[in-house]
Structure formats: structure tokens, C-alpha cells
Image (cartoon, rainbow, N blue to C red):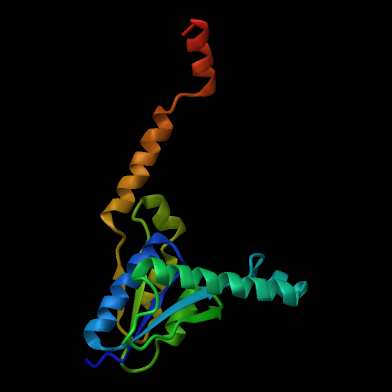
Length: 177
């Protein structure tokens, strides 16, 4: 299969950074155009924006989305790749439908991160990857999270469970504990 474009969903999350790094490697190996896409919606949703439109807020949201995409590209692959076609896009819309609409041409591959694998996270998140796998007209690569992502969650939880509480310190200082 001839790969012309590698479209990758980017949100700025750790999982999307891993997906972006994978997509960049795939684009290099296929000499394809790398297209990181950040889909965004207004903080209050489209209904709130339509009900109370404000051009200054919209401009601010677009600048924020552009900044998130630029930071993600910098963190994941060190900035725009030289010697490789690069077409970042910021599009207003829900991530799943936006990504599947963009990656709809022959020769496209869509790369998405799958997020964390905990049972609660599967219920609440991961819907973008599932949507893309179920609705895409091109091959989809779902990149799993790094193993270290789960380890840091566990360590953080352990640290919080074993952290001394302020009242414990007061009891020890007064000799009562």
C-alpha cells in the first residue's frame, strides 16, 4: 500500500504524544506527509458559543489550540521535521468525526492514542480511538500507552496514601502519637 499522508490525532496528552512520535516514525519510513491534527470545541460547547458569541473568546481559543499543538509537536518530535512534508491543522469539531473526515483519501493512515487501560478510564475515555476504528475509511493504527504511564499512576497513588497528614505531625510533636 502506498502511504501518502499520516494523519495523527493530537490533544497534548501523554498518549497523543506517543501517537505523534509513532506517526512521525511511520511518515519517515514511508516518506509520507505528517499531518498532526488538533480538534477542539469551545469550553462551554458549541451551543453556549452559538448562544453567546464572542469573537475575542474564539480568537483566544484558537490561539490556545495552536499553542497546544505546537507544544505537543515540540515535546514529541522536537519541532516540525525538516525534509518531510508537514501539515499541522487545528480544526473546530469533535475529535473522532474530525479525524475520520480528514483521513479519508486513498493513501491515508490514521494514528490515534488509546489512552490508559484502567477499567474506569475505558468507560470514561478512549472513545476517540474506538470511534476512529469503527468509522474510518482508511487503516487506523491505535497506539497503546507507554508502560511507564501506568507505573507513575501507581507510584503517585502510593505516595498519596503514605503521605503524613498535618494532624499526624501535630500529634507527634506534642508527644501524643
